Length: 404
Image 1: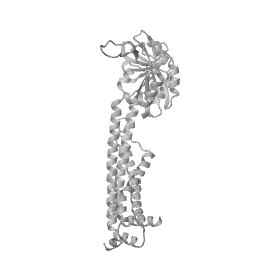
Image 2 (image 1 turned 90 degrees about the horizontal axis):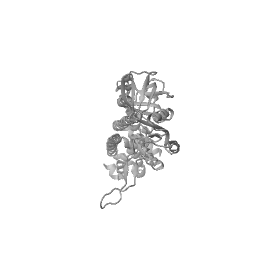
Image 3 (image 1 turned 180 degrees about the horizontal axis):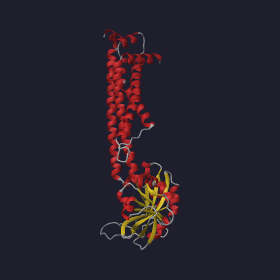
Image 4 (image 1 turned 180 degrees about the vertical axis):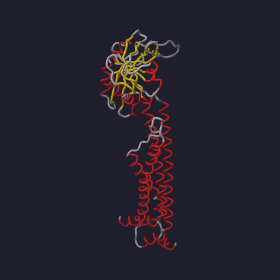
């Protein structure tokens, strides 16, 4: 083994220009891979975070009523008529037991019940159409983060208090501590104190969403003790689709995952991932060709020395190991230099390109898994790229090599 290391290192050291050239190529290739991966991962994470900042991963809603009366269709089999529930019936009764069952389901980290419905917010002579959302604040905050949305006031929801969006607050001229009246189509009406002003990230939501205590929302909307949705947060974000299917079977309710509710977003994320993968594959292929071409030149240049080693009794397996080791070393050191280069480029672009609020325009995700995976792949590619030149060197006839 010492022989293999010594010869491989000497060949790399004596061919300084070729070694530096291929190391530079591998480093740039690995740097591009790290940079592209960090940028794409950061963009995807940022898009998902912004999209799901006001959404649950899975939402349970009442199932549609199935009317078993057959439809009169000549010459056909019996069909079931699926009727949509009316507004009053569109609720979940006995939801406490369902919530307890959902909390015990694997891959569920948080659950919150909600009673929602249309309403009108009035202050002075101004009336605005809103959506009332009755929640238990502690449960809801575990599913949908609210502390990063707080603009003014305190994030508390005692009886008689409402949390409103900043656009609605501006339209009604309200500040924390102000009063507004909430009315519903069922005739419910109640005066509430503004506890806090929130920024939900979307202008339409800021104009319409009003959070209030669950019991008061149920009274205003005429739901008695029922709720309209059950919000669920999944421990594994991208397994929400399978979790929704399991919960639908277990509860008999309609379950919608964030993937089914955001089909275009999921398609865009898949397209980004596919594009990033193609770039990495082509760059890896280019790196492999570069390593192979340099080692082929090395074999040709060192043909006489290889022949002498073979004539002195060096087995072909050791000659093979020498060139495979060279490829592995080039891949390993190139991946180390390239990882530093790619990370520096990614961090640089994230700090230079900023939005108006000072946040990165191109957020990046750099973790140890990315660097370890890149190093392993680059080293393996280096060994595989060196295989053909190594086989050629190991098969050289000593007599022909020395004469050549």
